[in-house]
Length: 134
Image (cartoon, rainbow, N blue to C red; front, side, top):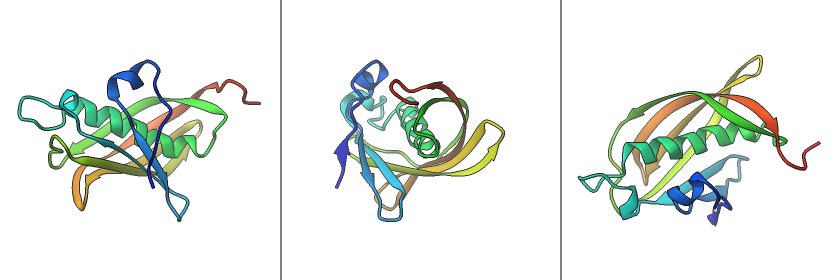
């Protein structure tokens, strides 16, 4: 049920293909396959890739609250729980847990199967309107 995200510009080219699936409860799950280019010297997914993926996952729940604007990341706090290995299918999901003025906080988790890889929170702020948004 996953579909590729259409993000092929800029940093999206470096990350490789990311996937997304809408959930029956109104939520979402994003995912990627750990490729050689994502790994460190121990054949684990590099923490930088996991952080970039978490940013995309945690921020997406915020974007669902207001689809007409881009958002920027103000803060990311993450805890690395276990490694994702070369060849692992990594998934992530998040939810908005707070709003204070124009700042939104989301909480999320990144996992492989039933194994938790990373948890964290992000603080995001809406920025420029999206092209074509009113």
